[in-house]
Length: 437
Image (cartoon, rainbow, N blue to C red; front, side, top):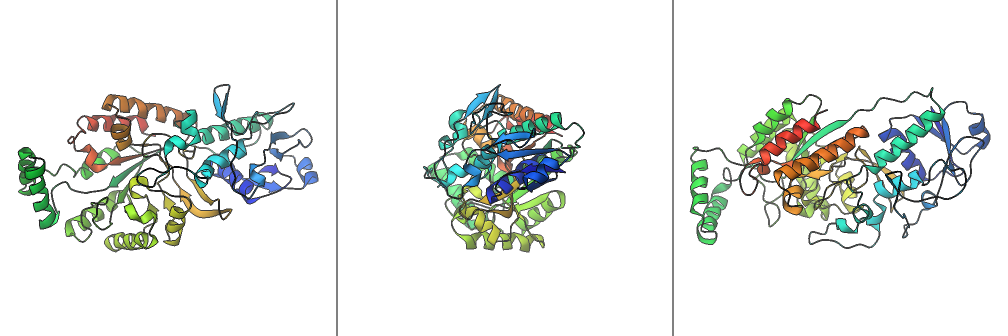
């Protein structure tokens, strides 16, 4: 077992070691503050603190993990031998020129999101305010890379220490904002949509398409679910999760009605082939009872407990949004990522526990980061299908190098080959080929 010495054990330090050693490297470890025990320990070990103990591996610490307050920090990003690093340290005979534990905690706790910051029109953290985006390393899984640096350093000193195997993983997630474009909308929404197409848009062709779908002469363009499942089943080892929007209809939430039998049958069908999670509506990030209500609706449809979630519009506000999920009994969330750019919002690709910085404690909620969303590529970055494929390729290549997890978001309606998404099915199929384990 790997032993870590520190002069003082804090919640922040214990959590950070748990993330790096257990969740990223899959290593068993213990922590001690006893110098004599540490010095006499014969297996793999390292010390974390202001000074070296004996001839052991020494990671020089900064102050962050020994604090409890939330204050402005100076992470000072820099590159060393092509690797992005934070929290530089100085001195003689250093194994590393930075504090990888403080850097990891700063990123995965989302420390900067607890400090004063701007929000966009949806109340979301503005990505351009984030350190990683401003410095230009948001597409790098830096925490995975720092863990790999630590592992190599320990392996060189202790070649007989056995590491658990790690493997690259692929998780495909699908947000169901609206299951159908035309079908099963109810009389009011169908008539309103037809009038809007005729009077406001003056799009007779759209009215004709709607009618052909409604009378069964064409498939509904948003109904791409069997296509998605079929493609997924051809990729052994990949994971597929659907997130269903079950909120009430309003300006931002426009789901197919959860009371409609066709919707219920569709969700039950998807549950037979993939995992299912709740997609809490736009207002759920501020209104706890909405998450409870919508989760119970999905559980009633599927006749089982729901544990996974992803906020609609990615309206994630720390720490409130995660506290809401914990109170609702949800255990795994997939909202950690950017809406308007790609990359690793928390600097990490693998699942890890949420740390409530205000309460200074590790929680039972597991965060599953994603690094790219189809809408981001097309709407925000305005990439062509060919350019998007190259972006996928770069992200997957980086993750394979660190045995990380490639988690992406697609939307069923964006595979319709309509409404600006022409050519994206081919990109989707090529992405699946690139990303397969």
